[in-house]
Length: 311
Image (cartoon, rainbow, N blue to C red; front, side):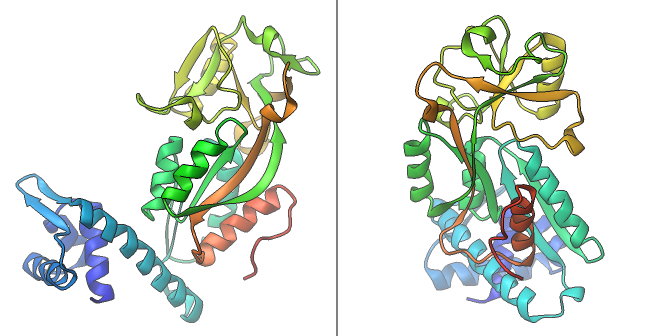
């Protein structure tokens, strides 16, 4: 097994086609096919099923791909550390729930590598997709939150995926709304005061449970609910319908503008139920590359916290 063969598998899986992968890799299609066949023979499994509609991973192939991605990224990490970084294309991907502080940290990271060749991606995803992306090494880092309500379920999902959760910061629940909302001038907002307004929630897919929600206190009974898939729509609904969402209260005004505010939420029950623990997830024992370290330290810098790693 060679690193070249591993790269071939990763590229074929991403492109879903031998022909497209061959074009991406600048190799002849028969050469690519032969290399994949040789690898399958060596490891004793069928990695891809070939059909007229393209190539698809088998269940064994998906497991191999997960390991291959991690191995190849570790190879890139070593190359990054010991090679001339000015001549290398820097790679990094982060998946996250919808947080503007993640965007800010990503922006600052890109600025630091802006004069180099790079291939970066940032994905705002459903919670399950954030976990899946990191599990399958499509992203090196994921940003999610834990609470008393979802901790047991999400911790199991992370454990089963070979992932670890790393604490960043704790925060209480806030009501996020338009600055001209009737409740915007309140010192705090209670659940009873919110009942006349629609609660906005990021859609988590048709089969998602409340444990995967991006908002705190999803176990409460909201008489009016609207689900949206992106932040722009969410903000428009706050203005058009006086909608609100319950969040961490961490708002990057530089990116989001000054038209929205976060007001402390005052619950009726145990205060711990409205606490959020923000953190990042990664493969257990995974060594972040130079870009990953930079991004995570930009996150910590946003919260005025000490860096988690040194260059």
